[in-house]
Image 1 (cartoon, rainbow, N blue to C red):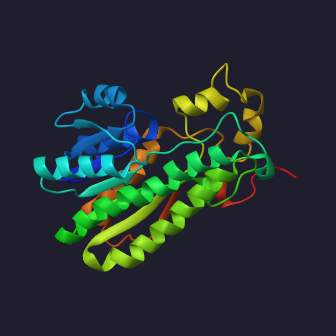
Image 2: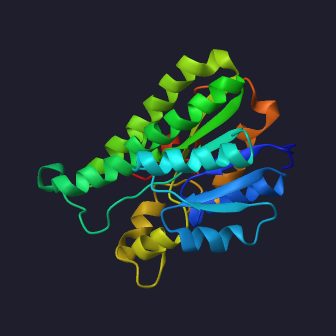
Amino acid sequence: MKVDLRDQVALVTGAANGIGKAIAEILAANEARVIFTDIDFAAAKESASCVPRAKAMELDVCSESQIQAVTTEIMREYGRVDILVNNAGVNTNKHRVPFDQFPRDEWDRIVQVDLTGVYLVGKAVGGIMRARQSGRIINIASVAGLVPLRLQCAYVASKAGVINLTKTMALEIGCEGITVNAIAPGSTLTNATKSLFYGEDGQFKDSVRKLLDHIPCGRPGRPEEIAAAALFLAAPEASYVNGAVITVDGGWTAGYAREF
């Protein structure tokens, strides 16, 4: 899929690895100028080094001062932000426990990154886009925000919040030439999910068959498949798609796929 993103400036959070990296790369392959941001600056810099006209910047999406510094620098250098992809997110491996046993500090950490981070970066970049009356905001949610999962209360709550935050943003600024949409990936093959399910030493590797039984396609997704949806939403041709949630989940949320 090729779209014309020439001269557009894209900011991608959590772009050092996985889905964020794949999104940043596909936007750059379609000639956008991409800023790879991540709390892990060294990894973001390494990922950006392989991409023409790309730039890496350190960004903790929970830090308003860092968000301000990054957006100020982008405006100084480029004078605009046309595409924002709020991808940065975390989950927990250690605390897969019922909600009444879930640690408060872990709840706060996940909600702060996965939901408040989307709000904070969206707030900063949304103001820039409103001044130009143009832009695309793409928030990365999850199937867990549509169909809740057991033992992940903070992640599920955060991603459900991202979905309704996306719709609220779309209602509020859609009339100003800015679209706001979400992507809800299913289980995707990244370094993080390898450590959980898909690697030989995965923490829950013995349960992976049960997970895949919920997915009609019978496999995890690839980061590039999520990135293709982001490219569609960033395309000029998607200008009438606003407030949507695109599931890229192999059919996970289509219905109950397992045999009774």
